[in-house]
Length: 116
Length: 241
Image (cartoon, rainbow over all chains, first blue to last red; front, side, top):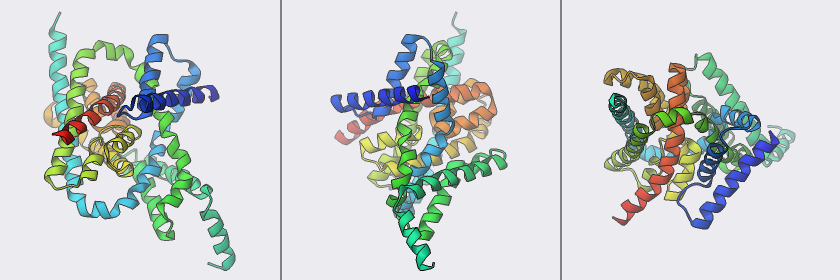
């Protein structure tokens, strides 16, 4: 648990250092995730310790959004002014994305599977 | 309040203990309600926990910054949690290899659709620039979306709210939309949910079936990566043009 947590922090740290050093426009933890993914592919497996800790952390992923979500109270004025644009944009964009991704992948897989 | 109680309140309000405890209590209460509702996507635990906290802070006149002094310890874990997403992503590797080509194309198109449609609709309805930049990463999981928003001039805390709302919308409309469009393949349904509605959609997808959930988790991780790579480049192109 302690070892796995340290490993996650080290990968995050490596991600942050790379982002700062190369001035990349990507969040540091995302680079950390990509690095860890590559490491797992190269090693060809996940240590039980790491899998357990990752699962525990991700099991309560929703909890980690709460402090940032409560920040909505700082934005009440903005939401009051722009709520219509925001609500329509969220509903329309989510529906369009679901439809486009679903229909496209359906078609591509059919073509993919009909090839020998 | 009596003077003694006021003293205790002043002392506690200045320490991080209260914000941290409030976060954990509100979340567990919200999760209990979510389970009681039969995991109804409308009873989203994040939305309920946020509502409880905002109501309490407003009633006691506590500024958000004071609350966040305590809650930041929970917030900090988003970083390592993002790194940890590599583990479930790796678990999907055999599946990913099988449908790699088609999935990659669907991912790129879906990811761009999510970004462009959100900005376009928001812009057409007169949303301001910081709001548009906060809307752009709304389809990826919160820790990634907040990091992106910060990079492109959005408001990370507003993004968090928009991401959670997107997830709830996706979880509610997905099944209905797929029936309408006759998308029946469970793997395809899952992949589309993961691209459009990240973790909250994925939680919903696992209720449809194991396959749907696994593909949603896969697409959620991939779209986090794709959006983090595509969006800052896309924004710099729009700004230059």
